[in-house]
Image 1 (cartoon, rainbow, N blue to C red):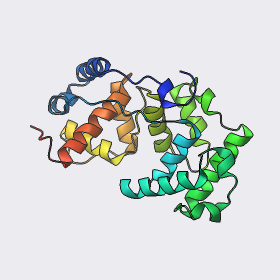
Image 2 (image 1 turned 120 degrees about the vertical axis):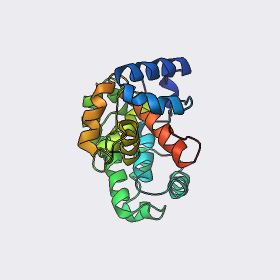
Image 3 (image 1 turned 90 degrees about the vertical axis):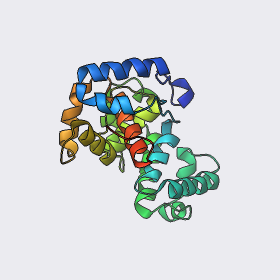
Image 4 (image 1 turned 120 degrees about the horizontal axis):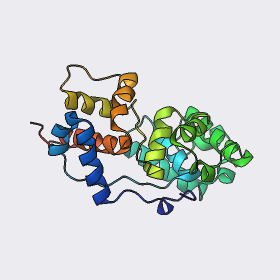
Length: 220
């Protein structure tokens, strides 16, 4: 993989996903119940690089509608979401676009890291999953969940699993027909069985979780 734009990364095709799902069920029959009930889905690929990571940070812990509104104000206000444009502002300046003070601080830190060469979004594409997660989480304000979802959604990496995600944990509980959902440590350990398709398993679990919550899917 080269570059940082979504167009440079190739998400798995529909056929790739069908084959991966079949392999996941073979590896772990507990997934069969969710797999049967869940229709086909597309891989969620979105733009990456500096702007892509900043957008994920802005979206953290707010509703979808609020995140979209803040991002629009932020991107429109800057004109172009680049490290240089961000560094034209201080924390108070970024707050005028709707960012909280902590998020303004994180966005400035990511911009400074990119500007100084402490992070290079192009070179991250050549790193292993673990090394890429380590490089991203070295940035202030970027936790493991953000790093993992960035690599899934912006790079199309098939074997990254954000085990700290509560929706994934709940869908894992359904798969195992357990009384309690696993915690983050347990979810990561449980997902080991799904290599090398942990990212596909995450998409399957998310799609099933969303479908059940919307009343589109009824598990047998």
